[in-house]
Length: 287
Image (cartoon, rainbow, N blue to C red):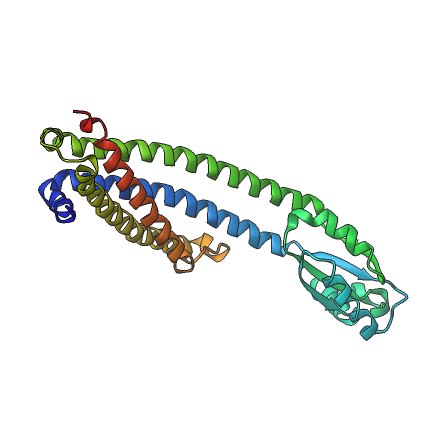
């Protein structure tokens, strides 16, 4: 029966090719939307990291080592990926590198405060983190760009929501198309199924070759879809990186997510192939 499943793929080569092609096409469309959403979220996450929070040390703490020791309390607040200490002298040098040195005449480093440049894990929790930082002993003031954070969070939520809606629609449409393609492939064999049923073959006996056929076609569609997606993704990202926008944009390397994509494609291909094969002959078993 397993051998019959493989034989059927060759015998009905045109419909097998159509089934594999449809599975590939649907997976590539769904995968492209998912990869686009992933890269947009990656870009927003990178921009979030650049949105720094600055915690100024109290003026009364003049000793650099004492000020630096506050870093451990800052890290204990949570939602903080890094807290880099900047001394008064470093703050003055940074200021002078950005502005005309003539503006600094008669001003020394005591005008500046020791500070910590802080990066957050989740910018959505900026308000709570800022409040917690203001409660750390030795921290006089915390500067955070709340409006930028709110904008990043809003964009991220919109992108995620749109991507989920598109994915849901594409999954439904793809399932419908693939199911009908497999039904068409089975239609020509309805008489064969009816004869087997009338001579006493059990439903399980009849279904097994179709399960094997659906499994193989699903694996082929998922595997070839993965390879096609890999080539398409590399082609698009290479063109993007070679353009002007490549200087300011970074994309997620395909190899870093390839195992997950392969597993998902093969899993979806197998489920659709097997389910489609079994479901397609359901009506023909009623003899």
